[in-house]
Length: 524
Ligand SMILES: *[C@@H]1O[C@H](CO)[C@@H](O)[C@H](O)[C@H]1NC(C)=O
Ligand SMILES: *[C@@H]1O[C@H](CO)[C@@H](O)[C@H](O)[C@H]1NC(C)=O
Ligand SMILES: *[C@@H]1O[C@H](CO)[C@@H](O)[C@H](O)[C@H]1NC(C)=O
Ligand SMILES: *[C@@H]1O[C@H](CO)[C@@H](O)[C@H](O)[C@H]1NC(C)=O
Ligand SMILES: *[C@@H]1O[C@H](CO)[C@@H](O)[C@H](O)[C@H]1NC(C)=O
Ligand SMILES: *[C@@H]1O[C@H](CO)[C@@H](O)[C@H](O)[C@H]1NC(C)=O
Ligand SMILES: *[C@@H]1O[C@H](CO)[C@@H](O)[C@H](O)[C@H]1NC(C)=O
Image (cartoon, rainbow, N blue to C red; front, side, top):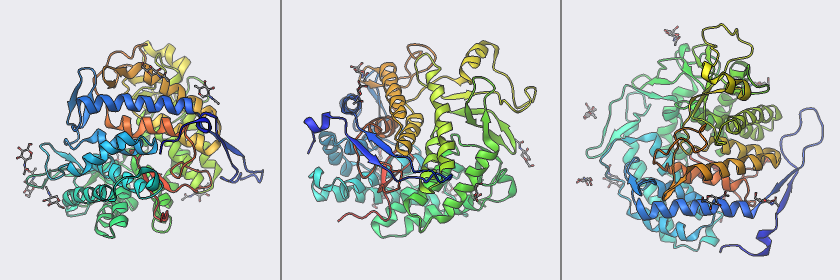
């Protein structure tokens, strides 16, 4: 049932008093969450526009190319946008789209594809999307959805079939999976190495599949690969306690370098350490300890203050123990993830540090001509010597921009990424401060204005040109899964999947923003 009418129009306010206890003994902060139907309707309407374009011109292919009303099979041709849109359609209670996807799921041919398969991308988008839909439809949306039990069971069946077909990727000498595999015949690419994020961002989905099917094998495979990351060898692979290199030898499970950060290629390994603890604190206490070690080192070693505009803190990358003052849109999930850890561990220090990072990522949005942040940016560290080889000043053509903005742009594209809005979401749920809703709304309005083209939304070339510098004609599936979901949830009413400061939520968001039910969250 779609809920409309007077109640929905009023701004609903909830009060929550629990949350991290202030360490100084002062009274806990009272949080008030306010839903805004004008805004959730606007985000729903953007979802409908993007879905209609996809459904008309691209379905059942993977992605819409909106400028020429074409399609791309960039994710093996199994309908990536449909599966990535599934959990967003569910939390928006868009039953028409939910039913279109439900009908499609049993028809996906997970036995065949003509292109190479990424274990990581397939896990976070397809497996995560299917498990989330199953968890929502057998949990909080069970009665509203009014769908056939058979079509719900078909979702889990397809998830299991997909994982069965992928699982030989883990059949390596060490158990560290090969990230690239092929079907027909099933064979590994025989890669010699795999990366921190692509090894370390499987464990939530594969463990959930085990817990739902009662078959331990899936979780065991992903957890075995993860053991090499929880106990990294040799010392080169851990230049700061808990902060790891990037490449791992598939034969031995040993690290091959000591370069990394909270950036693409490494990012969601750190994200899943604390999310596994959120999923099941009984089984994944060690993951939490490793997250804490990594975050403590991050605060001590990687936090860097810009020498440009005052008050900006970004996280540096590292090569061994040498820092590089470069970061990414992708890395802007860091604030939200550290806030989440602060809530779970009831420790305000982490929440506050995360809020500083969120503030600084917000500045990467407000400084540009479009009001959207860039793909990659750099800065000069305020405290390191300004003549140090690793601490160069901005290029001269960006000196003025740097003075004003506190960072300079090294890649100006925006590819419909969610991380900045994702972190606003956690900041809002942790504090109840409406400022974060305003930031999320501004970002959504700017993206909607700049990226809307043809039959949908497209990646753009240059966030610092008022018109976005042209379209690259691609609507990523994570536009549906992530940007639209977090943009919606920050203004939406309370629900079991909304993050709660007292940790009473029943779901954890996978790295693709698919809400997965916590191990202990039962529904009858
Ligand atoms: C809801 O959002 C709209 C659009 O930004 C705004 O005009 C309105 O004031 C908001 N309503 C409340 C109650 O905050
Ligand atoms: C897989 O799909 C391709 C392209 O559609 C087709 O040519 C091939 O016969 C299929 N193979 C199997 C084993 O289904
Ligand atoms: C995929 O799994 C199904 C059933 O689990 C099986 O029948 C099929 O042969 C598998 N296909 C591949 C390519 O492994
Ligand atoms: C990987 O090695 C196996 C065993 O030698 C072989 O069967 C397979 O074809 C190789 N994969 C590729 C993509 O060449
Ligand atoms: C992290 O730092 C906090 C605060 O200094 C300390 O209490 C805690 O023991 C540290 N934890 C780990 C795992 O390093
Ligand atoms: C990191 O340290 C290792 C071992 O000391 C060295 O071989 C490697 O060249 C260093 N890498 C960088 C990028 O400095
Ligand atoms: C989003 O863009 C559409 C199409 O340009 C426009 O009609 C709509 O008002 C925009 N939404 C917001 C909230 O700005």
